[in-house]
Length: 170
Image (cartoon, rainbow, N blue to C red):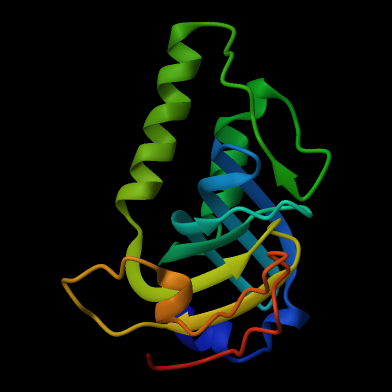
């Protein structure tokens, strides 16, 4: 079953994060991989758009790419020299005991990343443990200037999110 069908089979507020490995972090994950335990799915994510939130975690939208099941576990094994995740969201510090170990880990991450299947899914999450919306966007060459407006996500003046609708299509 495709990532689109798996993720759309369950409301986002019922999703359960198994493990996130963030490869880019600035006040929260910006890019990385995610494994969900409910529904069972794995994917890469890349920051698409963000809005500052003075009251907490920023509002962030991510583009998803499907990974084969087992990919996140394989990356965890390749990064075992960096330690073990203590939380569902892990930001490994890229300090390896030697260059050979680092190169092997980076090759594994690159190989798995090269096998991803790009989707038109956009995910809304502030912390990768709570999910606020999922959209399947139309394929277009033009990039919206403001993805939040494009998806109809209204943010209050205080930057607190309203209840975003889970939308399919565009």
